[in-house]
Length: 383
Image (cartoon, rainbow, N blue to C red; front, side, top):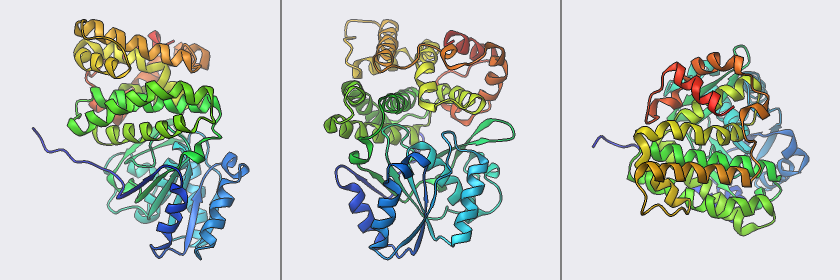
C-alpha cells in the first residue's frame, strides 16, 4: 500500500459555543489586525459586526471585505487583497460558507506568495504557506473551512479554477451550529447535498483509504438521517448539529481522498452559468455514479447501506442501483431541481463544458476516466 497523507487544520472547534472559544484562542496568537472575508448577507445579518466587536474586546482590529460573490472570482480576490494590503492586516478570517472560505484562501495565498491567483491552479503550485487563516463556517456543506481545496472563477475564461494546495489549509476551523440556524431551506438543502457528494465521491475515489472511508460512511449516515429535518425545520438544532458534524466528516474524507467527475463537471456549470455549486452537484451525483457503477458497484452498494437501504441480499449491481435511487429520492425530498434544464443549462454547450471538465484536477481520482463523449453523455442524462 502506498503512503497516505492526511491534511487537516491543526485546530478544529465544533459545537455550541465554538465561536466564542475561537475568539479566545485567536487572542493568544498575537495577531493585531484581521481581514474578515465574507458576503453582504452575513453583514446584513449582523454576523460580521458581532465578530468585529468580539475581536475588539481582545484588542484585535478587524476590517471587513464583503465583496465575495456566490462563485468567487479573480476580481473578488484582487479587491480583497487590495484591502488587506491597505489595512496592513496580519491574518485573515473567513466568515460564511464555501464562497468566503475559498476567496479568503486565495487572498491569503497570494498575500504570502505574490503573483496572481491564476498562477496556483492545479496541485501544490505555491512555494510558501498562506497568511494565517481562521475559517468560521456558517453552512453545513462545503467543508472548505478544513480543506486544501480552493475554487475560483476566472472572469476572463468563465472557468472555475481548482487550486488544490496544502498551503491553503486554514490553521483553525470553527463550526458553531448557532451560526447555521438562519440558513434558508434552499441553502440548507444545497449545502447538505454538497456534503453528500463529497462523501460519496471520496468513498469511490481511487485515493480512498481506511481513514477516509470511515469519515465518508459516517457522513453519509448522518446526512441521510438529518438533512431532511434540517431543511424542513431550520430551528431543529439537533439536526443542525448533526449536519455540522456530517459536513466536517465529509470534508475530512475528500480533503484526503479527493473527489471525482461530479465536481469536475459541476465546476464548469458554476463558472459558465454562475449556478449554485451544491445544486449542480446534487443534480449530477446520481448520473455520474451510474456511470461509475461499472467498476464501483461494490462501493456504491456500501454507500446504499449507509443511506439506510437494505442491500444485504442484493448483488453489487442491484446494490449500486439502490444507492442511486436513494440519492435521487433524498434530492427530491429536499427540493433539488430534477435536471439541468431547470437551471437554464443549454445542450449546445455540453461539448465545451465536457472539454473543460476533463482538465479539472478533481476528475483525476474518479474511479473511471471517461472519454469526452462519455462526459457529454452524462450531461445529457442529467439534462
